[in-house]
Length: 151
Image 1 (spheres, rainbow, N blue to C red):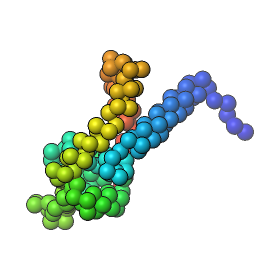
Image 2: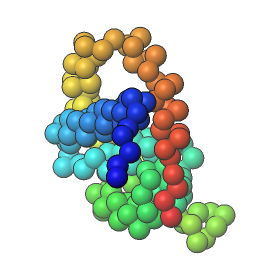
Image 3: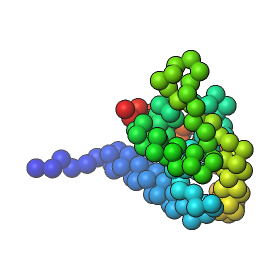
């Protein structure tokens, strides 16, 4: 026999359903806007590399993207074939490879940000910057709690 759920359980469930719905809708918004035949996964990698000056290893990148090393290797091969990234052996550990954004990759990432910007700015007309800023610490705590290493 099923246990009846408490109001608190229902609230937590609704909370995560809202987060899920926001994630799906924002994914759709980004997918629709991306130029250069980019997939969302490609854009996310380009964006991560644009913000990470350390040129992460593929394993570090896989962890950051929460995907398997095989998945990031496949994504990197596709991005490298298009000239958006370079993958080079780590100078200290020959078994590891490091990813670096190319000049073309930076241009494509910037184009993608500009393409998504109108939709984001439209949202900002509905939800104020102070409200977004206030929500950020909570969203960051949730993300950090949910972050898991995928091996």
